[in-house]
Length: 100
Image (cartoon, rainbow, N blue to C red; front, side):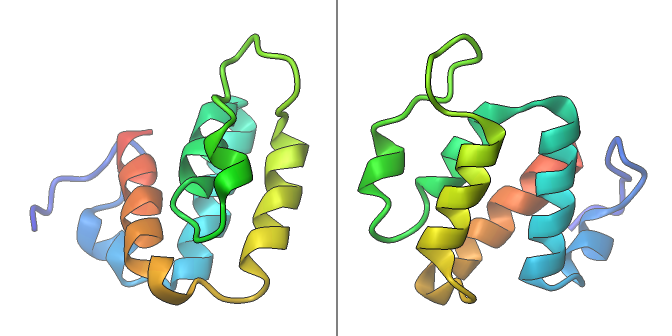
């Protein structure tokens, strides 16, 4: 992969060395700071049994989903593991961190 730093100053290779949980924490912290509800809901759709999340659009002016609700749903759907969703989630977290 390219060694071109992302807007945050880190390269893909640097981010790829982090654990999935470290990537999640950094991406969630950044999305929370940016108030990016859409990111939370898009990531939740990658989880198995996330039919509830798929029905939500995360639109900035929509009634309902909030960052706190997204975090709560994340904890409920993932428990302590990512199972088969890990590669997709890692890609989503790295992509978000690279773009912002």
